Amino acid sequence: MWYKKLFSNYANTYESEQYTRGTIGETDFIEEEINFNKTSKILDIGCGTGRHSIELARRGYEVTGIDLSENMLKKAAEKANNENIEIVKFVQADARILDFKQEFDLAIMICEGSFPLMETDAMNFQILQNAYEALQPGGKFIFTTYNGLFPLFYSIEDFLNDRSLVAAKNKNFDLMTFRDYPAGEMTDDDGNKVMLECNERYYVPSEIKWLLETLNFRKTELFGCKLGNFSRSDQLTTEDYEMLVVTEK
Image (cartoon, rainbow, N blue to C red; front, side, top):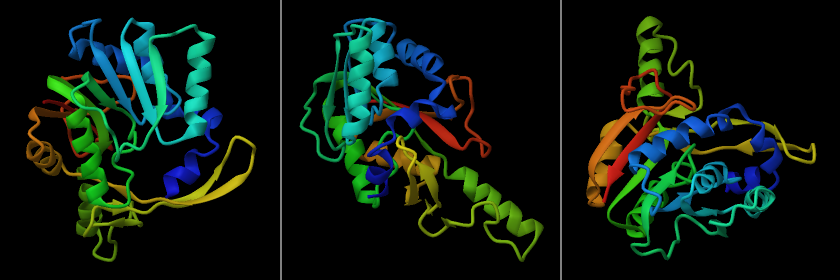
């Protein structure tokens, strides 16, 4: 499990990553989607160091954050304690195996929190199903995921421009499975070099809609996904590396 290896000792480094700097704007969007209803109970799937969980709790929402990584959750709890935020709790749990049944008004899964990092499509599907089960009827599910149109478009574009090039911009991307296998070296919080061989699933918009409809989600809407600037006016295009998904139970 490459993601367990990555997040076993990565909490401090994670906090400094560029992609974690959009929390305030992303939380603004989340609040608007639930009409600023402070009675809403929120589940944050793959909460990491708790950046969205804590910001939502700071604004008065009751939040439960779950994550597979003990290291990330420890950092999240420390941050919440330092700010005396008590209406957020963090639980170590596997998003593929959840026991929540109609307990939440909103589930969020931002910045690829567990989905779509799993090794099989069945595992990813289980995460979506568990999110559905955790929501009360009428509850919303907001998440981000990799946009399959992005590597698909550029692979075809490169092929058309030069028949000797196939997936030139995504050499590890498999068009048959829509899985990317990037490999590289990262540095953990102790300064150790760690080699990672990742396995990430990209989804085209029609797949996401079909998966959610299969689970009986309704009113599924897809948008572009800009760091710190989630917006319903952001139309999803082939230029978007990620997509923002909003759906309802």
